[in-house]
Amino acid sequence: MELILFIGIQATGKSSFYRECFYNTHVRVNLDMLKTRHRESLLVAACLDGKTPFVVDNTNLTREDRARYIALAKTSQFTVRGFFFQSRVADALVRNAAREGEERVPDLAIRGASRRLELPSADEGFDELRFVRLGDSNQFIVEEWNHEV
Image (cartoon, rainbow, N blue to C red; front, side, top):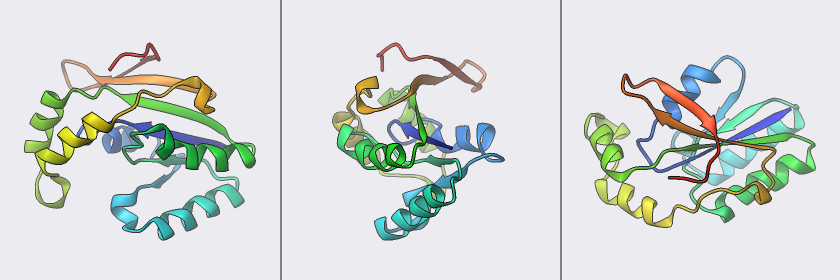
């Protein structure tokens, strides 16, 4: 029983990382797909009730954003793992420019998200924190959490 929380601004690879690493093992909870918090809460509740591992693939920028999921998971005896995605605005803007259609978000949204981003901390209730960045060949590199952006 595991909750995985992704943390990072838009266009940092969160959804691609989900597809690469968790697609076959964890349900994906994503507000962009579900459109409303009500639908999201129904899916989260179903995962918790069914003891199903799941990933919250949202930006989860602030401690407050993350707390809602962590509290529910801990109440249901879930392990909570956090993956912080390197959030360099310039890199995110380049990746975002390559997106098409609804996948692309306004550049202003990326800049605003960067200003609101609060680094995660183990004292939020995480059992494990990891740092994810893209390597030179756009492969994901997962490292121990070291408190850097």
